[in-house]
Image 1: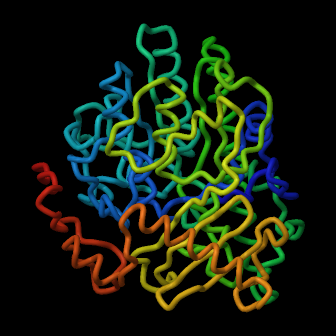
Image 2: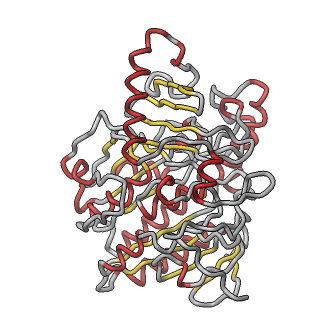
Image 3: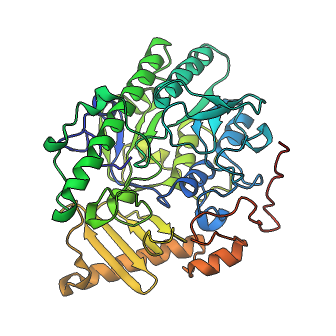
Length: 447
């Protein structure tokens, strides 16, 4: 789900009343990027607070090494009950494989599956059983009901809890949303973003019809979860976050609808809303300070009053939130290390509170003023009057790369470093990719 697909962000078409309410009661980080806008790399960074260059998690369908310290393990050690519902995509043993408790990275309650974009009767596993189960009906609604049940069971307990609900929609390759949601979006009434070329506008209307319907269905799910927190009396003392692993191009800039690894905002700019009334109050605040995926874990730990482990590479921004400060000069680094064949080129990029700057393998590639040019249609790179800005942003990008020890090599060099073998299309790693000695792959369970 891309950041622009919400009402509170000013989208004239999509209906997201519950997300709009959430934005009106908490913090809206309007410069949030996915550190690598594709499923597995993002999720690994979310759970570890580390960059893809450090974990080796820069391709889809990889196994997150058992040696990595994760969100659930940290919080479980602090006395939290941990629960995970929905899409996982961090196991690397096949998208339909059973994931035993030893490979669940610290999550105790489990109703999840590696990857399934069916949306209707999609599969999951639970407990210690390898029996494949299926969500009833539209799976986002079923996952929400499971989450509500988990909240009710844990709200009155003597332990705090952490729960992740990971939805599949609005993934563009998934099946359509239920009809009542599609009916909200007549194709001929959808306003196509101005950065969609004329010859792709009809196709964009069709895909946005389905995309927005899924967004509104997920908005309904968010409303159900918020209501359950209120009914159980824990809404004020619960940190509630809504965010996404990446967006999708949907024909913006002429890029195919399913593309997501490219550096434009439609791909890399994601929503991030946070509500925590007991500590941060219940007033709406827009946060301009850029937020990156590795920053999420340490910031949540900081808000919960817990120490941030030394393995975490992201920054704890909770002091800024408590003190209502901003870091206007901060830059959020994002990247594509070894993209799918046909889905763009490798790059490193930063997003500041105003600009997006992208460097490709051959040097500077894109420079946008996101405040004046939110659709990123005016590349400032070749304009002499912005030469000083280009030098400044390139220096800031290099500083971020130096900080994490990334020398921006070719995809082949990263594949060789980590010992990955890819298929003939160089798109999906084999499930038995070797890992470096310090990060051995877990054994495949017997069938």
